[in-house]
Amino acid sequence: MSRIAVVPGSFDPVTRGHLDVIERAAHIFDEVHVLVVHNPDKEALLPISQRVSLLEAAIRDAGMPANIIVASWSVGLLVDYCTDVGASVLVKGIRSQVDVAYETPMAIMNRSLAGVETVFLLPDPAHAHVSSSLVRQVAELGGDVSPYVPEAVAKFLRS
Ligand code: PNS
Image (cartoon, rainbow, N blue to C red; front, side, top):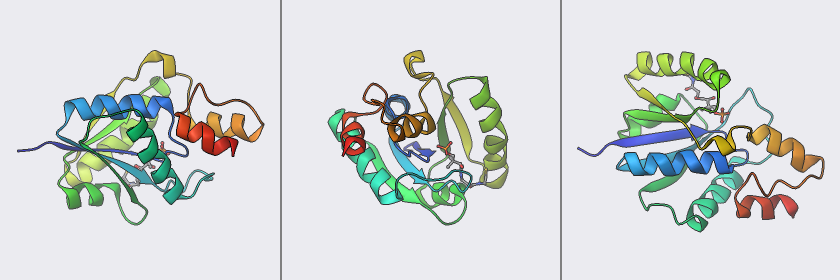
């Protein structure tokens, strides 16, 4: 039986921390769906289609394993997507206790709704301070975000 995992997120934009988690997941699971999800709690910078394109470019440029699929989901529950594609696991990156507190209720709810388990992966601590929201803020104020995002994103934000 092949193990399919979903790595969901806003990815607005994808950061080097996200890529670290995606690559770790791709080495653990048979198939990994990186899913761009609309988060109504956050004001978006990029349209979902652009986030998907940048993720695809970043994953390709990084030479990641071929078992990674990029998709998007904007209507309905995240676990509905998992059921549709036969995924039994969600993967989330955890940078700190703040992330644990944010993710735990969602993990328990997703398990309760559909029996989908959540696996927390720890990215390289070098990415501990990197978040999409800080990247957006630094970029909007004219700062250099290239240390924190893949080259495709840095190039896109410069343009
Ligand atoms: O990158 P983000 O913004 O932290 O990602 C959050 C995201 C999109 C993964 C989260 O908002 C989410 O899981 N949304 C799905 C909505 C859902 O299914 N909610 C009910 C069960 S928790």
